[in-house]
Each structure stands twice: as C-alpha cells, then as structure tokens.
Length: 437
Image (cartoon, rainbow, N blue to C red):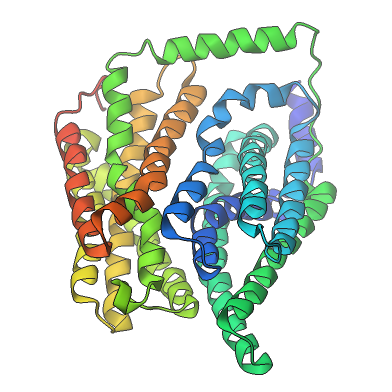
C-alpha cells in the first residue's frame, strides 16, 4: 500500500502547480470580509456601528467550521469541495458587484458575503485536507513556506493593491466623468468586487484541471451517525482537559483588545480629520497596509519564533503578550495628535503590525503545545483556533457601538488600552499542563 502511494506521488504533478494558488485562494475571502468590506461600506455611506457588527457576524463560520468539517469526508472528494467553494465564492463576489447598485444594496450584499463566509470556511477545511492527504510529511515540510507565503500574499493583494486601486479608480472616474464621489465609489467598488470574482472563478477552473483528484472514501449508511458520535467524543475530550476553562478564557482574552481595534482602525484612518480621524484616502491606506504593515508583520513573526526558541514558551509568553497588546497605544496617540505625516502614520502602523506578528506566534504555539496535545490533537487545535477567532469576532461586532457610546475615536482607543488589562493578568498566571523539553 505504501509502495503504491510512493509510486503514485512520483507520477503526479508537482505540488508547485497547485499549493501556491490554492492557498492564495484560501486567504482571499477572509481578508475581504474582515477588512476590505469595512472600507467598501464606509465609502458607500454605511454607518460605523452597522459596518462593524455585520462584517464581524459574517466571520463566524471560521469559528464554527470544526463542527461540520467531519461531514466533508462523507460526501465527494476534497478536490470537489475546493473547486466548488472557489466557484461559489467567485460567483457570489460577482453578485455582490451587481448588488451594490440596488436601493437595498447593504442587505443583499451582506447576505451574499455571509454565503462567502460559509464557502470560504469550508474551502479552508478541504484545502488543508488536500494538502495533508496528497503530500507526505517531507513534502509538507518543503511546501509549508510556500503555503504561508501565498496565503499572506492574498492579504497583501486585497488590503494593499486592490484597496489602493479602488481609491485610484474612484478619483479617476470622478475626474473623467464629472460625477459625485458617491457614484465614483460605487463604480470603483463594483470593479474591485468584479476582480475578486474573476480571480476566484479563474482559480476554480485552474484547480479543476490541476488539483490532485484524490479518492472518495467508501462509507456505510451509518457514517453520519458514526461521525456525530466521533464529533461528540472529540468535544467531550476537549472539555475534559486539565485547566481547559482557564485556557479558553486565556485564548479569548489574549486578543480581546485586538478585536475592538481590527474593525475600527481602517475606519479611523479613513474618517475626516474633523470627525477625529486621519483623513487618508484608499490609495494611502492600501499603500500603508501593503508595504509597511505587511513587511513589519513578516519580520515580527519570524523574530517572535526565534524569541520563543531562545527563552522557551513559558518564560516568553508574558513578554509576548505585552509586545502584542502595548502597541495599541499607537492608535490612541494618533487619535490625540492626528498627524498628517504619512511617514509617522506608516511608522505607527508598522510598529503595531510588528507587535502583532511577534506576539501572535506565542498564542499559536500555546494552543499547539498546551491545549491540543492528546488523542485528538488536530481536532482540538481546530477547536482552540475557533475559540480564538470568536474572541476577536465578538468585540469586533461591538466595536461600533463602543465607539458611538464613548463619543469618538480618542476615547475609544483609550478604552481599548483598558481592554488589554485582562490579557496581562490572565497571561501572568496561566498554568502550563505540559513541561517543555
């Protein structure tokens, strides 16, 4: 059996044909729903409270996906789900582009983005499944760097290049056609959504021909019942772990302040100076995220890994928590002084993204080494990741209300600083179940 697998792997197409493109397609939907849609709706006149709540709610599938992931094994192949979800997401982005011209554009477009949320989360499950089933451990190690690089390239393209393009198209259309800004923004975002649609549909067609076919496992009629029983056993084992309630609170609170910030920062950067914002255009925001932010995140992630390797996780965890959360003071200072220098603003964003990359690796490794170990290690890591996402999504949904209640960006970002305190406390006292080597 193993010999046949080896022969089959030797005869198949190189993973270089599909690993980069598959993970580029994986990264696209999440970052569009999480960040790009925030800027789009702001341009189209939707209020902050509505934007933050609904663009947070549609991210819930990435938290809940472990609950339906076992059932994907029952129907069709992993390749089928990858190709089908890419096509579905692409078509839905095309429908979003058309929906932006409707009187009730927000309700229709947010419903379509919610469908993309379920489709994108399902795609993540199937794509990781193809990666793990089609590549042996040595190949997985070889291609893991390409996987992460192209996933993050999707973020760079979406939040950097295409957000900047949206601003450029709006300005050009307004100047060439003599229309108001609202009409120009509608045109620019229709074009951007159309580009997203074309990218994902093209990738779906590409993967239909290129992705390894895989095999459909033979299942008995009792498969659904057995899968439900397995899922229940995995959940029961997860909640029976030592310190699990503390760990759940820790996972949620570590990124709690980030949840408030992630939706509001793009709105703050874009808001007029008279409204307490920095008055940046989409071109400026896209450039800052695509250059300073992306580079700083990459450097921070790499150095954070070396920091943990040197000091070990138990000693490094509290400093990592500090480096992750303290940089949020940057947005408080930006809100107070409202600088006009792009160099200063870009430096602040870079510093915050560096801290994010540096500190995030600590939480990831903690989930791998302290929460996941056991009989169902992969499933328990997926549950922990879902809980982590929930800890960001819920405050993100409430951030617009908090901003409105507090009366502006300056008091909002001061409130965010107080929201970091639970993270410091729970990290300082967090127990370790497994000793490090």
